[in-house]
Amino acid sequence: MTTIGGAGEFELLERIRPYLAAQSGRDDAAVLEESSRFTVASTDTFVEGVHFELGWMNGEDAGWRSLALALGDLAAKGATPAWALTSIALPRSWEVETLVDLYRGMHALARTVQMSIVGGDMSAIEGPAVLTITVVGYSESRPLPRSEAQPGWAVAVTGPLGAAAVALREHRALRLQPLLAEGRRLNQAGLCCGDVSDGLVREMEKFAEFSGCGSIIRAAEVPVAEGATSLDALTSGEEAELVCAGPESMVRQAGLRAIGTLTTDPRVNVVGPDEKPVEMRLVGYDHFA
Image 1 (cartoon, rainbow, N blue to C red):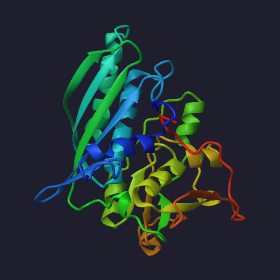
Image 2 (image 1 turned 90 degrees about the vertical axis):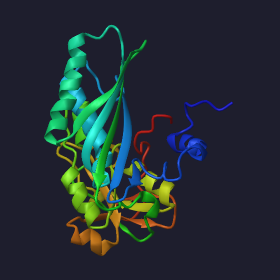
Image 3 (image 1 turned 120 degrees about the horizontal axis):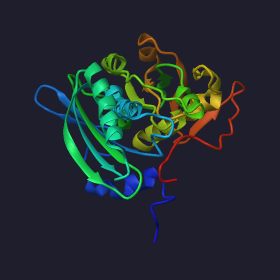
């Protein structure tokens, strides 16, 4: 009997796909059409010791960071945040003030993006804390899902990558700013976008999974954050930047510079300046690999 560990996220999604609504499982956020707008909803789970470390990060930073990462899916779909639900399972050993700080941090970010935390649930757990955030927003136009990406489209990112990897190595809290306005602009420009939650190469694997399009990523052209390495830029997850794809002319008109191309080959290939493959032992984060 196959166990969860080692199965990989894509295999698990494929196994449960028959039990999901038709539009589910095609991207990181669900898009539901209403009479005059589109509702965009997404859920993320954050585990203490995996997604946040309270040994060197305070509760407020952990709360802000968690909500910022959840909002990345709305930013990728060009949606304006409206409200969030938060549910937490927490150890009895936690100090009450840690829980309060966690919610204080989420509230601080929610206030800056003009959204409300409207409710949720709370439970105890024997083990690390588990925080689940559901975010809901609205878009006036239909976001383009990854499943509709086409071979020949250019791939671009909104800014330097690798800052999250640097902060992790330095045990330094990083208060991400979700690119909501930028996401709206890029979606209105007709681009297909995703957040870089699991690393650039991993996100391109999601494009391949949903659309059948692989990609060639030119490593030397991927912008690198200060203090980061090229490998960081390719694999660092939990970044605020977005990765977008579209016809090259549209990518240029949106003010972005192409770093790669979608291909009919379903594999994700990273190449160096000499066009030769770059060997990579790590491509990004998969909870189940």
